[in-house]
Length: 182
Image 1 (cartoon, one colour):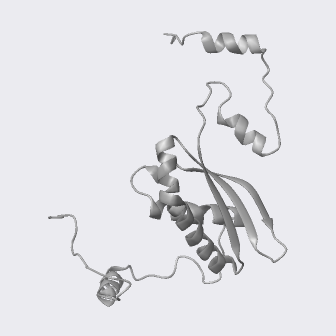
Image 2 (cartoon, rainbow, N blue to C red):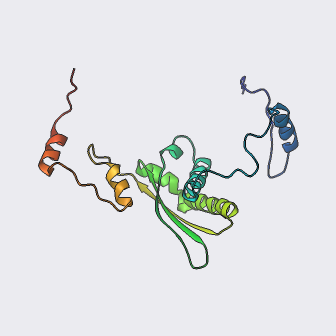
Image 3 (cartoon, rainbow, N blue to C red):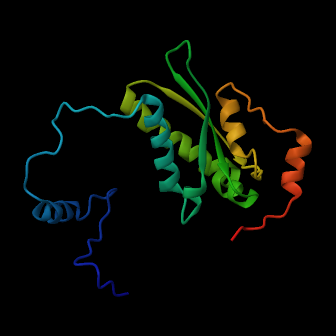
């Protein structure tokens, strides 16, 4: 196939270390020569929680194809340090359909297990501690026009949304067809 937008193609193998030097030389020759943008002692602005969520998200993106990774929504359910110093993180992963849930889990749970193992390995390297990830796949519930996932989000924080209208008024709103005004 022709790829006119590519200047050069490098067939490489990281495992066999084939053509890695050529690729590195090519990239370095084209890199802008300038001072480093950040000092060597700069730290990450993300919290530990955000960093863990980003690592899991990255592993999902790398393992799954097409649009599915962008539909996966993470929710942290629990996070604590166990007696042996291991950090246990429990996250729910929400997708839009049962078929997407099956893809996320994979045959015999292999895809989810791969995401867990790769994430745990990266997190151990990043934080210098063992991590135990528990990832559970769920189908996201249909969103209600008035109180959709906001109620679920708030309940995860320990709060409860209380509607300021009566249930009869709410039902009346839901039953009334939408008519745009001019």
